[in-house]
Amino acid sequence: MNHNRLDPTRAMNALTSWPLGELMRLAHVRRTQYHPGNQVTWVFDTNPNHTNICQTRCSFCAFWRDEKTGYTLTPDQLVTRLSPAIHQGATTILIQGGHNPAITLADWVTLIRTLTHAFPKVHLHPFSPPEIVFMAQTEKTTTQHILATLWEEGIRTLPGGGAEVLSDNIRKKISPLKCSATQWLELMEQAHLMGFKTTATLMYGHIETPNDLINHLMALRALQDRTGGFSSFVPWSFKPGDTPLGRRIIQSTIPIDYLRIIATARLVLDNVSHIQSSWFSEHWSVGQLGLLAGADDFGGLLFEEHVLQQAGHAPRSNKERVLHAIRGMGFEPVQRDSLYRPVT
Image 1 (cartoon, rainbow, N blue to C red):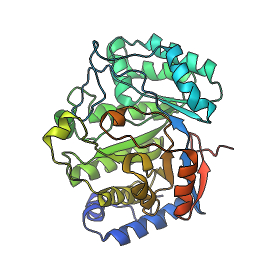
Image 2: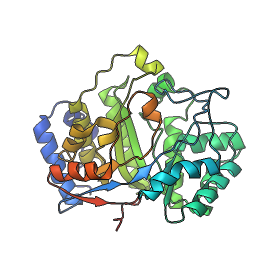
Image 3: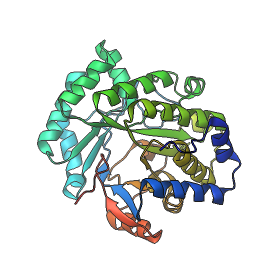
Image 4: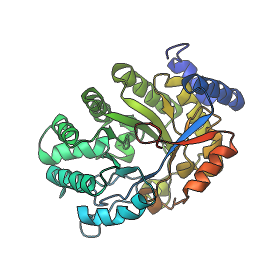
């Protein structure tokens, strides 16, 4: 949809000055144009985080460790760890971890093949853009080669992690060793043109400005105009916890910030089908309110997750509570897979 497309000035006004109730109303109207009816989707996924050894050492992360204190799971160990989630009904395995120089592309292939053999009906959703850029550097090859290898192994979707804020000025301050904003966008464009579907993310609430947030959304929209490869947009607030960045700044985000970002994203990203409001990242009541601010997806059950847990953010749930939360806002819950297809 390209009707009444918000330019950066109007988008900034929406984010910062439009009355919240009106902003949410307009976003919800736009959401119903994309998704008529009364359904909200959710996914039963798990994210075991296969390694926490990471050379990038972002200042907002409490998860990373060095080679002496970190871990790397073998494929068989990962199968063992994943089995409880799969037996309880998980349909997606999100594979993300640290930037570990000891892991090779051959290791990734072995991991994919082992999981595919162990869980043939489960969708693998592995490796964010920074991980792929790092792997290309480690292997002294191109990101196109890494992506082509993943495609040959049957991978069809990629998580959009590692975007944080797509501003190199911000990234140099909070994650100077991670891929640049341009590299993140270029990797996503390459993936989309190969046929991958991906998510797009945003981590706000640290040192960014409203202008940085709008530029982030505009960069995503411009890329989506070219490729159409983003399936959804997923924002979350920075969790200071036990992180170096959290010890340097005063956490200032409030629930209203999240609702404003959800609603503004729904209005700006007029070419992205799905907007996620997460119970996991923002807790239950805020996640529920996001469903009235333009979001049509409630995120994942996340049977297992360790990155935010290390930052002191470790909410837990089950299928019944997710269904109850969606119904409590007047919607019909529909389980989906990572391609947003209903799971029966």
